[in-house]
Length: 129
Image (cartoon, rainbow, N blue to C red; front, side, top):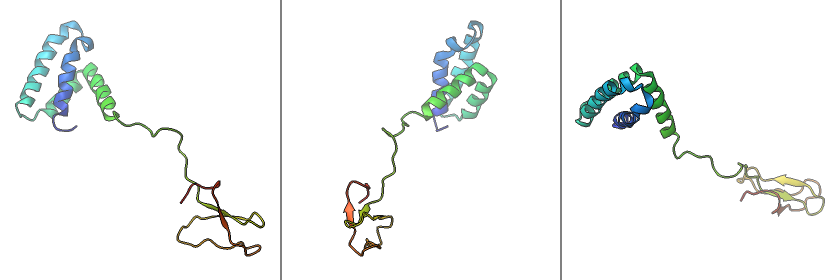
């Protein structure tokens, strides 16, 4: 986790303790977790201690995993609409309907192999340059 992220996570869990633990366990757990958070805010390295603390309390560990998963996927969305690969430009022979796709733009457009006529760009077939 990033610097400070463990302390932020612990602070969020502290606020949720009453919903996560049995009422009899909340006070002692809150006291211990608050102490870790305060030490961390004071500049002391407590990330490993907080993580060990969470491992000792399964409901907190599960909730922490949910929070980390939801935070890590925030802002990531698939692009809108269906994906579609662009078609290469298509050239056709005006004489006999021969078609040729311009896959390598470094190569010149050839002539029709059947009658030698120059191929013309078909603007309906292909979305390339």
